[in-house]
Structure formats: C-alpha cells, structure tokens
Amino acid sequence: MLRPLVRLLLANGVGYATLMEVLKSVFVKVAEEDFRIAGKAQTDSRISLLTGVHRKDVKRLRQGSANRLQQSAQASLSAQLFAMWTGAPEFLDAAGQPKPLQRLSGRKGGLSFESLVTSVSKDIRPRAVLDEWLRIGAVELDLDDRVHLNLEAFIPKKGFEEKAFYFGHNLHDHMAAVAHNLADGTPPFLDRCAYYGQLSESSVEELAAAARKTGMQALQGINRRALELKAADAGKPGDKRRMTFGVYFYSEEDAAGKDRET
Image 1 (cartoon, rainbow, N blue to C red):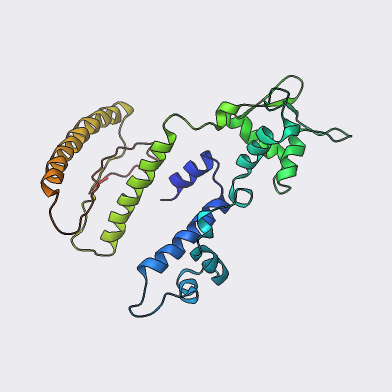
Image 2: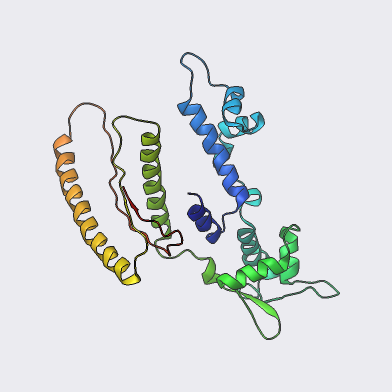
C-alpha cells in the first residue's frame, strides 16, 4: 500500500526524516481530535500513550511548531544542496548562476561537488549523491570532470501544485471510505473495482480506452446532478456536507497471474 507513496516521495526529494515528522504531527492531531474521552481534558500524557510519540514531541506538536518545519532540519539532502549551490555567494559566478564544480576536492581544498556535499552532511557519500543526480538529470559531468547543475531538473512540472492538491484530496477521501468500511461503518461507502490479470498489452489498451469513456460519462452525469442539487439546496437550513466520486484505471506487469473480480 505504501510503496507507490514512498516512490513518489523519493522522486520529489522527500526523505524519511521529513515523512516521520509529518506522521508524528498527524498521529498527534488525530489522537487529539478523534480519541477524546467525554468530560476529560486531552492531555499530552494520554496522547503520548495512545500514539507512542514521546511526550516532549507531543507538547511541541500541539503548540503548533509542527506546522513550521525547519528547512535545515527537515528538508531533504538534495533540497539543502540545491539551496546551497544556488544561493551561497561562493558557489555563484558573476552573473549569479551556479558555478560548475570540480567533482573531487584537490589537495589544497577549495570548492568542489565533494566539499559541497560534506558541508551539508557527512553521513552520505558524495559519490552516492552524484550518481543519483546523474540518474535523474539534475547534473552533468563534462570532459574536465566538472559537475554542472541543471536548474530545470529542480523546477516542478507545470501544474504540479494543482496535481499535488488533488492527489492529496482524492487519496484522503478514498482512504477515508476504505477505513470507514473496514471499521464496519454504516452505511458502507461505495468502493468497487474490477481486477483482471494475464491480459495482453492490446487488451489492456482497449480496456483503458473503455474505462476513460465510461468513467467520464459517469463523472459528467454525477457532476450535472450535483450542480442541480447544489442549486436546489442553497438557502436550506441544516448542516452542509461534501462528497467525492472518482474513477481510476491502473495497469502493470502481472507477476502473480491471478484473476479476481469484486
């Protein structure tokens, strides 16, 4: 369940330490809001008991400091290196652009990619960072063994923030529906999928096209009716609710070779 998320996080420079800090804050927030005992104050000690988060961290997170993650402590190594290379005067040329850096430090020291990495972290080998950055196209090596930074590799793709917003929204609502159903919530939310394996690539392409067509028809139908109902509900007394209806299609190589449909 978590592998696609971790793959996405790593691809966008979000490491374990950052994720753990976010998870801590979520554990504390959920325990504080959803696991109260009627008539009793929700204390740091009880939240620590519920979550396993240390009481000092609970206190810090409840005071709101979790919402202000410190760049130096939480940002990924790549983000810190990029910030240093593009912001520190010694790494910039006369035009304010990142200088090409020698891959290795010389006997007399001086600026190099190796010294850049070790100035930020001595726990990660500079060669490991270089190999990863070469893999993703963040840097290039020239014939003089100098490392050139590719600024474009660190600029989010067009519309990334919007995509990330809907990514979080959609996954939250789907996960909330599944958690509700697993907890025997009533009435259960709609959560149905069709699974098939051992299909040829052409068959998957045909099914993907059919899914896009029928999926869009379903979405457009729900959207039209939702607009009508929203207009009719305007001004009506009572609490308001929100809803999400979505469709998705996914395929990959079938290693298990198992067919099932639910």
